[in-house]
Image (tube, rainbow, N blue to C red):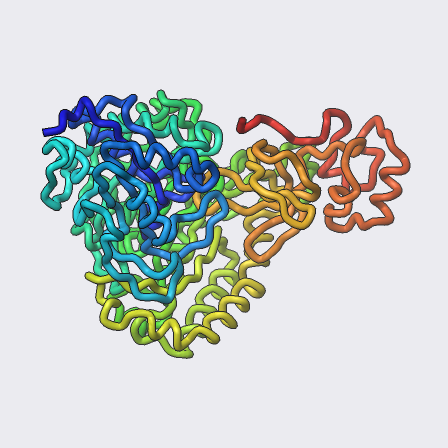
Length: 584
């Protein structure tokens, strides 16, 4: 029997993306942390557990030696919703197999990959369960499998689910893993689990496969945040749950007292946190319990950081699709939920919450004087899913009418997520598969483009009017002479800044222009004596001629000396870079 104290373990994070769980950088999911904590609990010393991301292995082949030489190699990954990613690229099936072939020791695979694997990480396809040449595949919780495997001396395990008592220990013991993540500490957001499972049974969703909601206590989550905070983490997202409003309750009804303990406790143990966001909020909860939900939303908006997004799983506004797929909220109910979140949390820092929803200063005040408006505290996001049973041509029209209604009523949504279904064994969609999505491919592409043009861009202008300041934008990559970056948080805006700036740094940026799902920003405040031609011409209404005149007439002693169009974005002095920190 292998003594756990003698084991050398390598854990590779191939990234996860589930209906209620993010794990692609800059997010780190719960799985590697819980799994490492479970192995420590079983007797493996912390210093004998090595953690790598799949991107690290792609960039440095020498790190594959850690996979080859480990007594136990653990792979964690799996995508059960399709997405596009900037901060990292999820492992493809061929890479997952290569890892298994490389490892000389015992191999364990787990995470949502247990639900199935496709030919690629994309929507509109069937998913099949495969072992991908691993010795052990966790059909239950990978953290429970890792504990039992280590405890048995690498002999095996029974496929089981962990309980919350185990989770309390493992979450605390596994916090050290974040220190090994290449993004730590500046550009890493820790996904936090408050519950898993779902009270509802939508046809396509893998979350009900975890059973009915099983809630952690507020104290348990707060202790985990404290341990992560002590390890240098400053960014947290309460994303691992089907419905944040139901936390601490019966799985359906809101519980304001539990949310108050949760959010208040996090703020107490992490006083200097940089991000506190959430993800899933079920609109049917708001529709059925509007007053209790309003109280919960006010609590969240009191404690969170700006730019937060509550994802609403409408999935389809078509009543036929709703009926055939057990979708639990109607278009009218979802609209009321959107309205309530706007009314309770659609205000910006420095504004009176009673005035919500507010649309910022619309660029009328000077950024350099008053700091400019920020993003609203909390807005809904709308999830729309295509390829579901019963989908027809009218489905696309129903969805567009719903989105247009939200816009026409003067409400805000932070983002609209349009995707195609992935069909997994164990869900009702497994019998239909991806055929409907394939049949409607042309309809889907045309409709998606129309939504981007007709709804997304004008909605962005409402959510982030010109002059809105986005703080701590992390610069990630260059493209066509522009530097792109994002804030940390839930569904952060992609920001394009003119020119090729140093990557790995953060800047504050003021919004000046809009794409469909991204914005153009200039450094905030913009130094008129140092601004480039590209930065100046990005200011709406300035133009090349005025920008050229501004450059020719430098230097200025005061921003009041420049064109009024520029003055509200400008300052004089400083380096104009907006740089506030380095991610080195």
